[in-house]
Length: 444
Image (tube, rainbow, N blue to C red; front, side, top):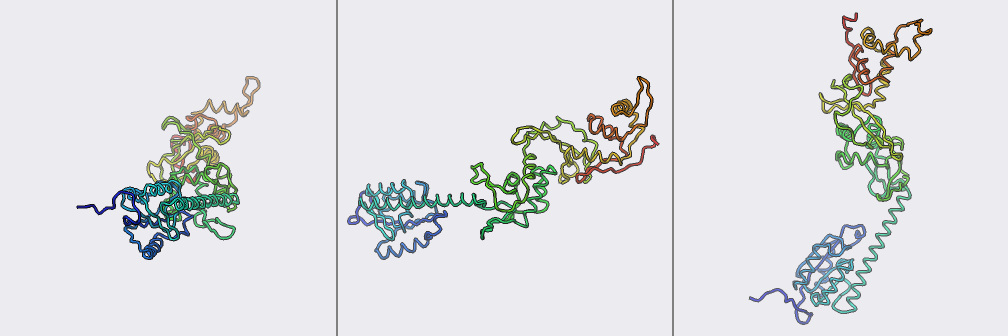
């Protein structure tokens, strides 16, 4: 049985009927918005084929850019089929539907030179293996590429001008909305902006980690404009985005910051405090560090013991490394406890304020720290001397001594002095309070 496929020999319109393929293409790029849709191209070319008396053997359509040669799978399959002799002619709406790259245009012309591609028809031109017609095909394809390249450059220039005028191109980050009307192209999202501002506040002032922020956002059921919860990576990108205090990068590879014309959500000072909080040198191994106020405080919310973390943070610019200690609930009793972190300095202030109002076990503390108390009194000039003779020995100021120990004592001394508080110490909402207990009978 003889094969029904066209023979792979040079053909002309006089010797062998041309087998035609209709090729329609449209990409989703910005510059193709005004081009005919694929279905419109097919409809128009089928009408023209009827007018020309041409029978279309197959229709192939593709949604893909033609800027880069050899990247369109449907077009590449068509080229293969022409090389194999399945098709000898192409019908397409315009030359730029076939290609806007020199590489693909060259392939088409080579097929014409080999006699495998007999004819290309568009709505306004016909191209055959004729030097002038092949040259015109190359010119029209190159012109489409030139127009596309210039259009791309104009788009880039426009985006850079927009950034220079204080409006970042693209979608505004969460907490803002793209307005696009008049001068004010980016506006505050009244629903989400306050949450974004509070997120920065919690990280800077309450030492919230990224996971703490996510837990809090999930607890209040915070969602993006698309209705999705924020993932951890998005939270960190948000916390490191200068857009929120009024500056932005464009493009991302450019280190220069543009001054925005939109309204900032936070201050530059708050943003810098967050960056300091996030710039953390790796912590010491768990269990390798002891802290002054662990094992003596409990969480006021879930009654778990308070634990601590040491963070070493490298300051931008100077490279100086500073040490920060944060105390927080150990969450042994409640994994979802949301009590905030507190810096050691702020915790110290809380304890010092409480000392004046605490009921200390004076007898027990005096006995425990007798020698240290006398050295402390001499240091502060409380005891008077005349030569080696003791003139006066006033009453011991135990509360002043307790403050002194909390500020200057060793870890063990701090813990010892707080053992004589008449009650248990709790930390809740960044405040220290005492739950009093009856005085032990042996001190009455």
